[in-house]
Image 1 (cartoon, rainbow, N blue to C red):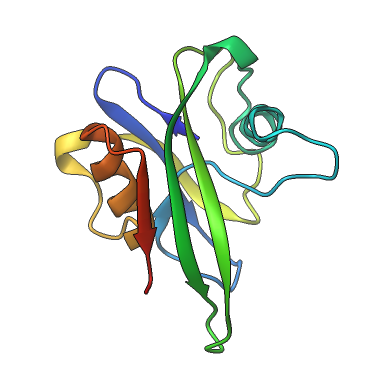
Image 2: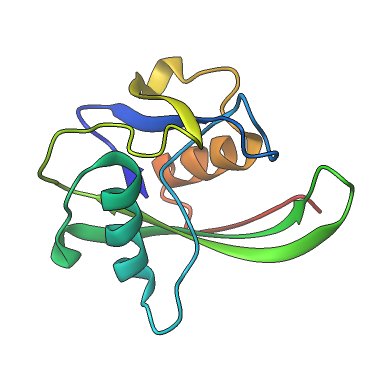
Amino acid sequence: MVLLNEDRLLCLRRHNTGVEDGFYVVPMGGLHEGETPKQAVIREAAEEVNISIEEEDLTFVHTMYRKHTQPDGSFFYQQDLFFRAQQFSGIIRNLEPHKADDVRFFNLDELPENLTPFIQRAIKCILSNVLYSQYGF
């Protein structure tokens, strides 16, 4: 999910996951069986950062096809769908402190240096209205 609020991007810093710990990402996760991508975004936003989003307030903004390399060198191919949340309700809080140790907004022109590279690429594409990219090849 790409949550932009007045040119600021909501990010979480990964912690204690074993994959890209110490790097910032956007709220994200996988699909559960029978779930649509928009339903997954809504669920993950509630589970990770305590906000409610209506399906009609999500706009598809980017698809990334990437080679997802694990710390042990193994990899798999993944398709990431990015949706921009136009509005939300609730107070942003870190509901998964065992997976993230910081949750906050960053100005788009001052994103953290440790924003994970595939998210950096996706944000650049989204801001340039590029709907498709590939990463990790």
